[in-house]
Length: 165
Image (cartoon, rainbow, N blue to C red; front, side, top):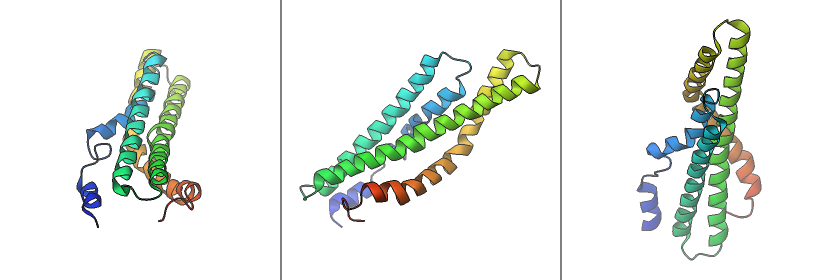
C-alpha cells in the first residue's frame, strides 16, 4: 500500500468521526421543533444539514483525487466518490430521518389532540419532546438500512463498469 493511501486511512474523518457529524442531524432537530418555531427555521435546519452533506461529499472527492493521483480514470473515480457520498448522506442524514421525525411529530400532535384535553402549547411541547427523543432511536436503523440498500442496489447499478471493486 502506498503511503498516501495509508495516511488517508489513519487520518480522522472530521465529517464522520467528530462533532461535525451532528450537523447532519440539524434537520431532524428542526423537524422536532416544527410545531413551535416558524417554518423558515425548519428550512434553515435543512440548509445546515445539506451544507454538511455537500461538504462531506466534496471532502471525499478531494480524498479520492489524492488517492488516485494522475492515474487513468481519475475523474470518473472522483465523480463516483462525490456522488456516492452525496447520495448516501442525503438519504441517510437528511431525507429519510427528516421525513421520519416529521411524521412522528405530526402523528403525535394529532393523537394528543384526539386523546387529551391538554392545551395546544402543552401538546406542541410534548410533540417536540417526542420528536427529539425519537432521534437517537432512528439513526442506527436508518443508517444500516440505507447502507444495505445503497451498497447492494444504488452503488452496484450506478457504478457498474466505472470502478473496480
